[in-house]
Length: 135
Image 1 (cartoon, one colour):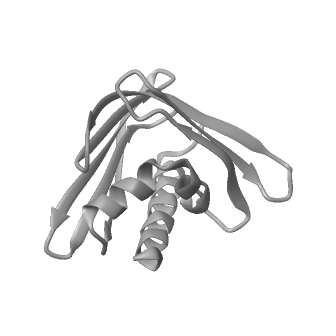
Image 2 (cartoon, helix red, strand yellow; image 1 turned 135 degrees about the horizontal axis):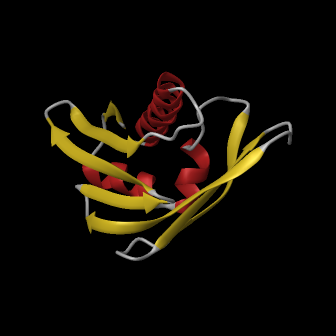
Image 3 (cartoon, rainbow, N blue to C red; image 1 turned 180 degrees about the vertical axis):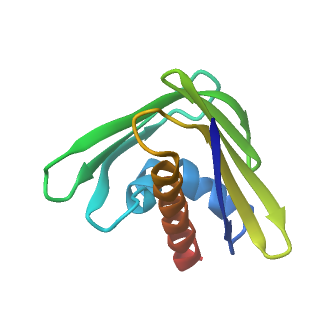
């Protein structure tokens, strides 16, 4: 089962791409709620390169690593990656109202589909607010 979430970012595609792929930026926007944060991020943005993000509850009660490998990159347009036995695709589509960022990923089996969709959508919405505030 695949899940797709998307948002429109009112900023130039170069700014959107940079914020999505730069570790310092990722640490600022990569959270679904205010009681979580990303404490570390690495990006080796090339086919075969790895990425990691350490996400933790601010109260220290829980944390996890989100990590994977880039499988296809088209600058300012597309990122494909694998994470575990799952895959994800991030599309950057420039339009009249800004850049649509669309993320499609293989769902996991531990959490309900709607919970996964809501969490990934919240992160993407936070991303849009972050980028728009910078530009």
